[in-house]
Amino acid sequence: MLLRVDSLTVRYRTPDRNGDVRALTDASVSVEHGETYGLLGESGSGKTTLARALVGLLDDAGEVRGGHAWFDAVPPAWTDADGTPRADVVSDDTPVRADGTTDLLALPDAHLRDLRWAEIALVPQRAMGALDPAYTVGAQIREAVRRHHPDADAGRRARDALTRLGLRAARAEDHPHVLSGGERQRVVLAMALACDPALLVVDEPTTGLDAVARDRLLDDLASLDAAVLLVSHDLAALAETADRLAVLHDGRVVETGPTEAVLGDPASDHTAALRDAWRAGGGAWD
Image (cartoon, rainbow, N blue to C red; front, side, top):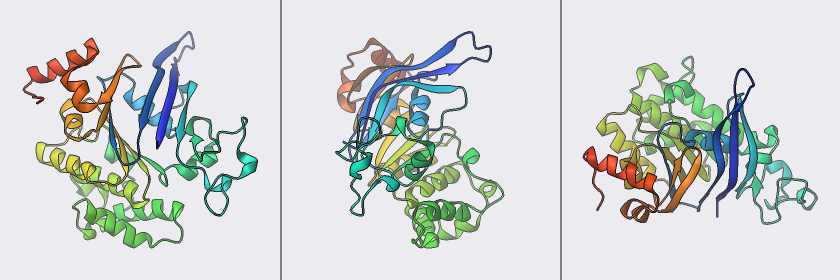
């Protein structure tokens, strides 16, 4: 198992502090090495909150109130030369277990930064907001590589990542504003791939893309060696790409299972309603 999220609970504090907004309650999902796992739900269901909680990027009002996220990696500062966790950091008082998994939700910020991009990377929904307009896309990819792989050829990794996603290597010298929406989305995905993480958390990647760019991006995701946690309200995208699926509603996981089983014979009334709405809009599931 690459990632196992157990009973994740997240709340958002309100400005007047008279109450909290419930975002996630006891949410549990798991992702295997190399698979594409989908998180399906309407806006406000808690999908993005789950994704951002895993990498420690909730906004200031967000707070994890419970749960664990066991991830098959240990921060380098806590490992021996062979990559196994040091004996002195494995205890009930630390987030590291003897089997080499780490609770992402309990990691100090400095150690979580060591794993972010290197082992688990978030590809956010709005690619333009994730790119600095003052720097070329190549410079931004190289910076991410150097942060986590200082001995690597950052330029080569940047060019290889771009060409792998169907962009010419020369686009590395372009600034974000000259790229199309689909190209910017692929640049952010390339930035993540250049660091060779085990898990990509991809949030609503098809939002705002035309049909051609959408299909190309889904093909790119399907071709990756890394595991993908694909967050989307786009049922068609998940039906095309996800091996397994979790359905969220009002901050709770209401159903999980193989994608074909979940969409073909839903156990939850909410899942059935989402599927039926999709079919009414022209979608089909065979």
